[in-house]
Image (cartoon, rainbow, N blue to C red; front, side, top):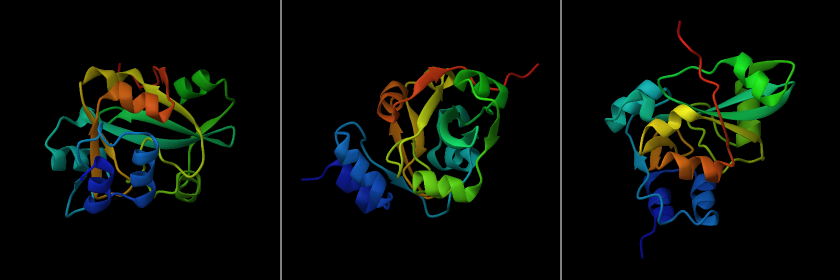
Length: 170
C-alpha cells in the first residue's frame, strides 16, 4: 500500500520530514512529495521547478527574537518585515538566524527547511498572505524536494499564529 509518507521517503524527502508526515496523520493530505534533479534553494527556483506562481511557495525562515529561534512562514514573493515580527512577538530585537542556528534548531539546511517536522519546537508565525492561494508548496526537508498543501492545513500542523509580517512596498 502506498501512502504519502512512503511516497515522501521514496522521492527523497528528508527522513525526519517523512516521519513527521506519518506522526501528524498527513499521509492522505499530502498527495506526493516532488523531487527535482537540481536544488531549489530559493523561492524563485522552487516556483520555476513546480510551475507555480512565486507567491504559492511557502518559505520557512528562522529568525532570532532576543536570541530565541522563531519560524516565520512567508509567501515566496514577499519579504519579512523584522519590525512587524518584533511587534508580533513583543521582542526587543529580531535578526535573521545564522545557518548553524537554522540547522541546529530545525535539523535541516537553509533552502530545505519544511514548515514542520523540526528537531526542536519553536514559536511559529504564519503570514496571512499564504491564505491567498488554495494550495502552496513548501520544502520537504531538502533543497531538492517540495510538497503541496492547503495553507490553512499547513499552518495548523506547523502550530502557526496567523499574523501580518509581510514587508509593505510604498
